[in-house]
Length: 226
Ligand code: ZN
Image (cartoon, rainbow, N blue to C red; front, side, top):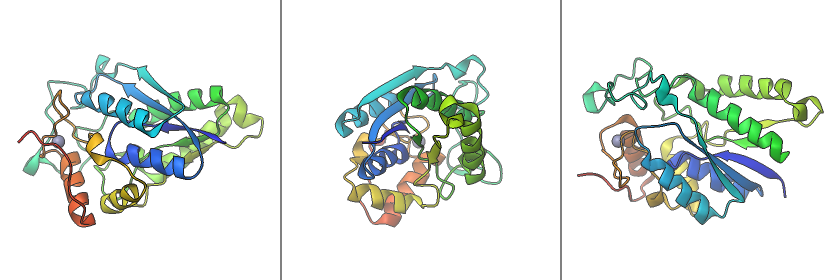
């Protein structure tokens, strides 16, 4: 079986991506990041999802991005925008500077050690918060870099960054995942989930998720604070 590295945040998209990779016949190794994020409960979710999915191994990397903050997810002086404060005309404060570049770079190192040339990331450029590092152009550029930057790439083993969700709406993601048996009650998407993993229902991530379930015609199993 071919090995793949899956970036697993504990959210809806990455849980679906993991199941898609498994359904394509990959033996999956998951990687998650404790970056001192506000919604640390997602890591508990990631552990649970990885265990239930039967991944080969699950690495949780300590990488404290709170050291320099710069995002409402890593700086308590900034608030997560909710409701009418969400401004879709600009990149929101929940953007974590260079997060996907950092995470993919670490995942690339892990993959090279495993001799795995396939990395899966659950980015989507349809129902999303407008982050520049979720766009197909970014993924293509990173993949190009990965093949230039690594021994495995230079030796002719083509590294591929898989983004199976990139062109799917949230509803389509939920429909695909439901067919593959993703237990969405195990996932946490909220930017400010409480310690028990309960969602606020008000942030952009909660709103996109709720809209996705509604449009998919599938019962929203998310646990909310209220
Ligand atoms: Zn929320």
